[in-house]
Image (tube, rainbow, N blue to C red; front, side, top):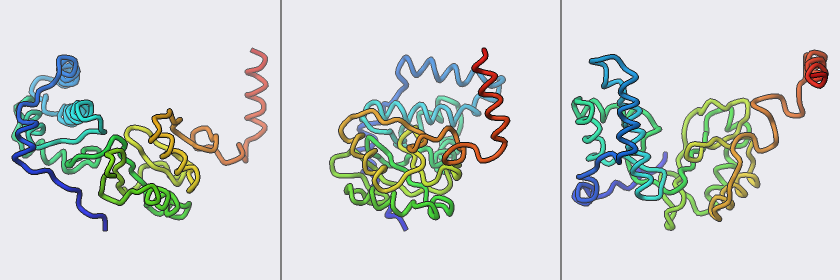
Length: 221
């Protein structure tokens, strides 16, 4: 079982985030999200506004962001809804971080397809870079979390790092991704072995004639 993340002292949290408010740019985005819903249904924008708030915290802290209690309170008041309703959303969905995370939030899928395809090696690569589940590295760069299915079973094993998915991993590929991120290099998300979407490794295995015919048709144009 993963260890619980370290929750900051409440007094310190309120001192730092008690006066949180959307930036002018995010205020426009918040109103744009709310305008998607009919009159009286503005609270339906709570997920979008919590995400927006988390991203603003991330920009302020140079991390992936998290949701301190005062920030959740702000979003609830912004939508004229009880704080507990917003808190219920924030605690239900794992896309929201309830404790500080690093610049890169590494979420390793450990569900059956990924496990069978080598997620233990992916996790080992993370641990050999100094990570521990539920913890942030001392330099504040990486936070490691083990998660359930991320919906990329065909390209297992995979990790989600911040907003991007990295698929078709092994120990060495994972290590290289982490090293490149640590060095500030750009890393291309998606399949790391060149697959397009979730096609079979090595290309199509059936309906080859149709694929070839479509390819020849495009060449003519």
